[in-house]
Length: 165
Image 1: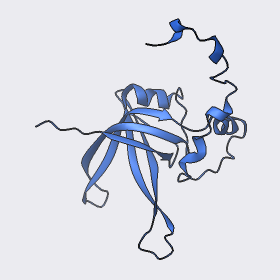
Image 2: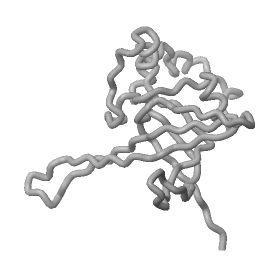
Image 3: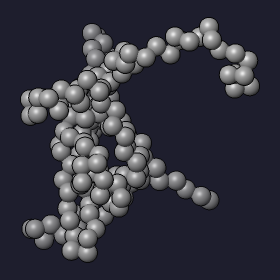
Image 4: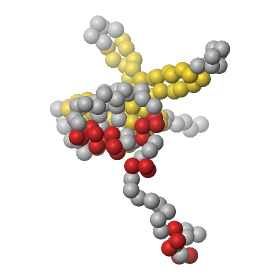
């Protein structure tokens, strides 16, 4: 029987990506990501909203790691990201001699979802953005509102040849 090892995460980066260069020229990028789930606690008589945050270790290799390391993809702490990859568990011996296991997401796709206005603020006010990595996802929900393009401007000029069917 076939199996599938696939992970899709949407969350905020918990720290700036860390680049590790190897002697053979390869690079590895590591970063943490927080995903937060909101739910109503029905067991409580007030039915209060609760948040549960999970932290994920993300590892990137190859061309994607090179793009991040060379700042062709500029990601930083607090950015809302879409990450796609697979789970990988590895063993290592810690400094105190104990055998340890760590599960990581080996990313093969990363997409920035942060609001363009926030990116502009980051570039103009470098170092002053104190966004929490567990802010709500609504931060990028108004991306369409930030653009000046109205998709219905030319609605009256659509002819039969413009229709896809």
